Length: 376
Ligand SMILES: *Cc1c(COP(=O)(O)O)cnc(C)c1O
Image (cartoon, rainbow, N blue to C red; front, side, top):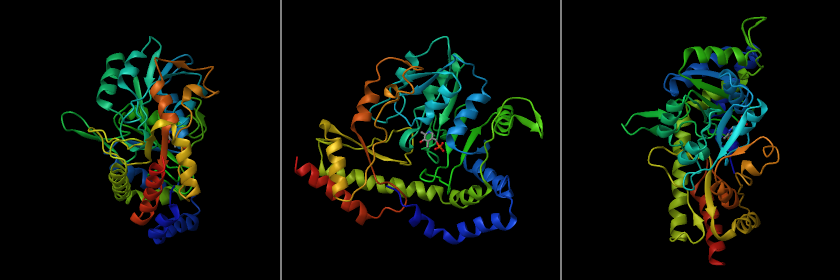
């Protein structure tokens, strides 16, 4: 599914010397590389505050803590996403309100979001799933109108850009009240362990986030609020500082590989008898964290097994919508129909997608797709 080793070999000297310099200095915690990477990432994201932390789930949790939400407050979240987007809502005893997604983009349905509003609604977590932005303009407008916070889950879309109707562009993760991301190894900007970050343009919120991530203290051993201990390791910052320089090139490589898949699949199956290829929204660039097909006619699981038999890995992201997860059933309020989320969970299949895909490898995968549809 991914080729982290192939990617590493191309930047090995820089990565090795970055890691070695951390070991040589033994500044494993909050070493200078953390500051350097933070500054470079801020520049990349357009100048917002960047606060690094231990992982993407922590970033989401810290975001909700920094906004001062109280048990019983409702937070709107798409039903089709990775568990972390909603898990933190439950962890803080807030109420996840699940809404449906759009069939084409897999992202939160603006209509469903609007209908889910109650007097308890305090925040929305749009998830930029699989590498492209949610339709942020109407989400931000709705949030402003009703005094809601917007926490962008940007774990899968770092590097993606949203275009507003007036032509203004913004990086995903920088448009809401707070943006969150993950540096999990297989993410588009991944380190060699765990890592995460928060983004905000609000000075006082940035200060509050920094404090919460550091045991609720501004001054050492003086704790103003209950916080947590969530840091990016210096070694991971050194790795990320090297990889950040390549992020745009990585995004382009993924997009190019995705276009190659889509072009070929449309030739194999011109009328979408079986394969529904990913749709790129007009308002967003797509950085293809995943290349995700929808498989029609209930053939998804058979195709997955067939690909496996032919040595082609594939993955189901995600097999269950959140409303069907046992952990969420007792704490969730489902708003409206979640049928599209269910349909996506039942039909999605993600193909290998990474920065090192070659046409040879893609052709082998495409040949398997072709022989499967021909045998139907
Ligand atoms: C990976 C991911 C997270 C969590 O990131 P971790 O670093 O693994 O904690 C959150 N949301 C989404 C959508 C993700 O894909």
